[in-house]
Amino acid sequence: MINKESFFLLKRNYYKFVAFVIIIGTVLLINTQLSNFKSNAIGFVPLNYHSQTFDPILPLKLQPNLNENLNRLIYKITIDIQTNARDVFVTAQLTYQNNVNISIENIIYIADIETILVESRTSSFQIYDNIGELFFEWTPTSDFHLLNITLSNPIEFNEYYTFSISYLLENAILFNQDFENNYIFQWSIINDEYVDQFAVIVNLPVIFSLGNNSIVSALDPVADYVSVDERRFEWSYYNVLVDEVLSWVVRFQTFKKSNIPTLKIPGYIWVLMIVLFFIGGIIGSTAVSLIYKSRTDMERKEIVETLLSQPEKDILKIIKDEGGTTTQRRICSLAGFSKAKVSYYINELDQKNIISRERFGRMNRIRIIDETFEKVYFDERQKENVDKD
Image (tube, rainbow, N blue to C red; front, side):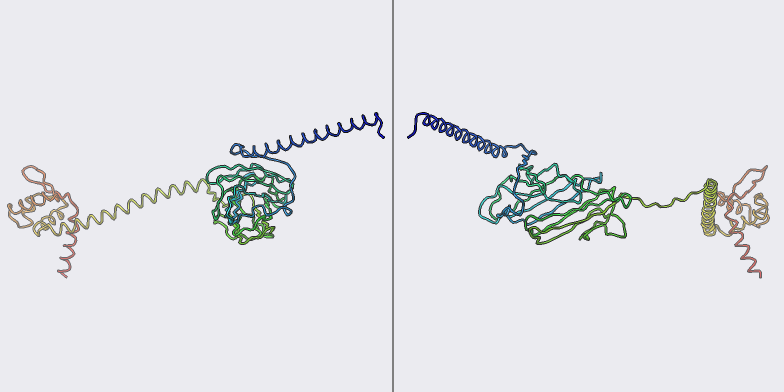
């Protein structure tokens, strides 16, 4: 039989238990409401912002297929090595197809590029499609980064959707101490989904070039495509399986211009070259002038031979024999022509600018002013000598 004291003790313990249950229930209710509020608030994060949590999640292999209703068709990763030779900028472009008859509003992406450097760090995530930036929730772990991406438009059955993810991979490049100005970028990827077509592209800035060490290859594996300037490299894969590990190595160095020896010319050589240049110019211009004069004389000769009559040629011979200058009366006596005939042909030669007439006392002094007639004269002389022989 319970006494009165025991009854009051039991009653007090019962009240304590009820109070404890009420407190625990209230805490759980408040925590649930906060969690729901946090989950709902993610959809209202402004563009170019994201929610970052550090809640532990299951390892990748223990999770179900992250995008089981989607088919990853194309996966292209472009890596731009930065000029500081430490960081790389990564852009991943993905194309999915919806293979179920339900709308898909979210896609899970795992960024898990691993480098040989333990201090590598991923930052500055940006996610966007052809419309603009996308909402996403970022959950980093010690092994990878999980991104829960809200699409700008749901993917309907058999529709395609393409979006891009870009981020900075800091401290990803190793400086090779064995060779001067040589760097190594070595990284690997564990493929988290089956993909039909997979490509990796690496771009070097202009200040770098591929390494030229004969012991090891600059690209491992050998790239499927190398640009002409050897600053863009591409690898292509097909039907890449889940959990398949792919690795690459790019060895590069600071770009070195080819040292072409310059020819040092002494000062006196320059002076000599300048003098020879001027002498050559004078000789060249003189030769051109002589050639031009010769051609002009030949043309004038042809004109003289064509336009001069025989009496005019006879008169010119007489003037030439008289030393280039004579009188009109002397021409009459030597040519055997009448004064009127000599006067007529003198006028013709004067009009053709071959001779000039000057008044000398009561006589006209005739002087040859065009020496072209000499060729006619000598030709005629040579012809006469041949006829005599």
